[in-house]
Image (cartoon, rainbow, N blue to C red; front, side):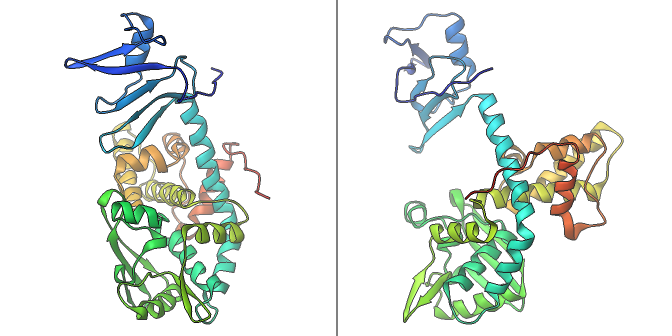
Length: 332
């Protein structure tokens, strides 16, 4: 199907409350009678709690519906083909990130082992936490509005350092407590020094003259681009981490002969991916684990379980092998 751009601010159908259910308004504001058009609108699957609902006037619009959810956020329902295209790009980006990481990590290690509290050293610490800890970047606005934290807004109190182990615990997205551990000697040295500024100080801050400057999400994104050569985001890191975790789990389990055993293996892999990402197995499967890994598993293929330290390279080899992935162009 050839998709067309939807204009959610333009003309469209409307859903309005009517008794215990809903009625629909046509483009001219009249009540839409039963028929094929109404069947399409009802089949989109708009949550009952949404208000101010707008529905695309054509069935091939890339946005099919918008509405305001129970907590006041504008939400969107996209055409399935649009979602499929976007997901394909998302998972390809994660694999391109995997390709760029070996050289990026070498440069990050050099920055992390430098002296003082320079911008580059602190941002290298942020990169390492993003890479190893699968954190969301977060923002000051989100922290102020929701009380939740991400990498850019962590406080010193959110981190405990013991030898080479870094324990993270803080209120994350949607008010859910985030708890994880990173084992990294170079990062531990830096964070131990930064924590001396007191529990309520922002963890990631660099020194400019005599002033401490907290890093921002924009700083982190810019550093990631400098070191990887592309506009990768925390979502790309999380997508890669979730996919690698699932692929490694399936490799350890091995290919199972029966459909029931394969189903259990996949369920276990989603649990392991969700533990890495700090969300639910269903969200991990829906948003973060490349479905091509599951396709290959059903066909009897996994990454090499004997090479856990090179899981990213194994993953790329698995998905590149049959031309599954077309590399994305580097940003200029």
